[in-house]
Length: 189
Image (cartoon, rainbow, N blue to C red; front, side, top):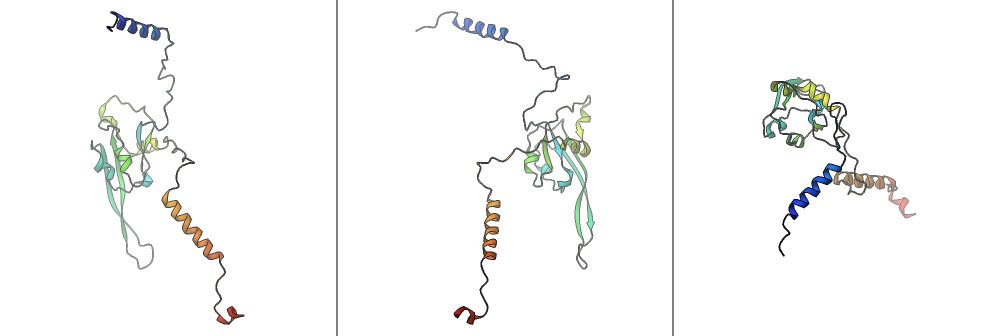
């Protein structure tokens, strides 16, 4: 059966008419802040205390937009007669958001949970050179990171916790059993 001539035009006009009669939902952005969904990817926040300057984030970044500078610092021995240790100290941590493509690889590869997504999105600048944000600005954004979602009550218990719980139960059971006596004559009577 051949389509009726003009039926496509009629369907298109019907959609247009329906859309014209609906109330518009325009948010006046600067005056009214938008309701962002949870876990929105805005900018990257830095939790400086967790950063060990391992450089994984900078090495894995496909855009090479993370700049890290550090120096080694000698830590005195913890115990007398022990040897001194050296550790990396963070001097500079900067992200160039004019290059960043917001892929989140840096956040995923960080083994020490030093990088997080922040929902902040108002960081526009008039000059592109000002989009390189240093660690103090990244630290400010860290405090806007939402708490992680609650664990699913029906989820399987993590293996690490299950193993630790079983070990603790075995130790508690071993301590609850009466200790065998050391004298064999007491067992005979």
